[in-house]
Length: 465
Image (cartoon, rainbow, N blue to C red):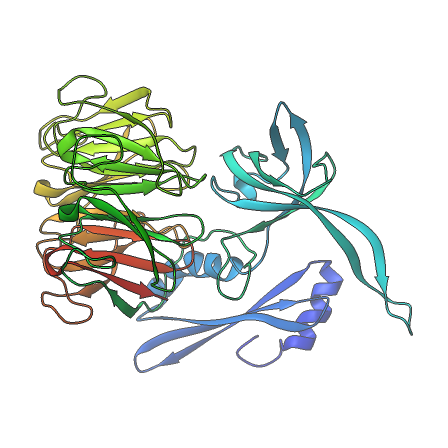
């Protein structure tokens, strides 16, 4: 009916009011020489306006229908999840939005109270309600019909209480906050933005950088490996500072291979040749360290990668011991898995690791030319291969749910679906923009940016949607 024009915006709005829904979805499928194309619109019933419109193309009907669920998720991601606080117990806040409604660990919700109605001065029509924000929550655990949250922020002189309303949001971009849910769709076009740094020892220069990470504010942290320091760069590419020097003391490093940042802004450094993890605050002040050379729990032989989970647990991967270790934020050993081998759950010189918002762990099993997928406890789930030659790092795109896999030997990085389907590739060998020489690190922030540690060219390259 959308193709014939019988269902236009006005008709969809009238039908939506009859059905008592908030939004109506209309679509039209067209056939042409290259295949099929579907045009979808989401119409807000109350305002009778098109809120989202997009296109989906495929070579045939079967391929088109396979793409529809992810495509719809992408469209729905433009709309917020709404609910209310249902329990406040011992510092944990429960909201009535669960896995069924689209809640995921790591999502953030604003909490607010509704005040007086806002009325039109002439017609008296109620246009909305005054909102008073009371705080900000982050989802820590999700059940079928509810989510367990912790308080990130309480507004001054405000109390978060049962019955207050919540609305989901993702991280702020240049145009302010974008409200919506996480989706499992593709990223669309990714374009090269800029190259950061040159080979050298000055601030903003790099000497064989291996690992990188971003914080909740969009700042980039680079493990400047052969300069034995961590450099911090803001989202606009401005260098904000650097910490560390070569040494064995607190706050000094010996070839740090990777870096990770938790939800509080604390920085964890894989101090590889000192066989330890160092924890710093957001200003670079040393807080604590753990680890030593060895093979026991909490020991390291070649600490090649580090990542932070949704509950701020610290995940490390060791390229010599061929294992993953998990620690509390205070350095207490929690669990470990893996050994040298070719089977599922075994590793051969794994170099990179990342953890998704639901706790899913991805390991770049470098010499086996694959990425392995585990649950948070270390249970093997799947293996992803594609065209990989020597995967050096992996990053979860929290905005889309997809995976970025960096191939250090092929000098490409790939976007993969959670099931392992290769969606697109970027890069190639060389020293030009968008080219790499032995890249070892990749990360993605919540704003749609992807950063690659172009190790052999001693620089970092930034991409964005």
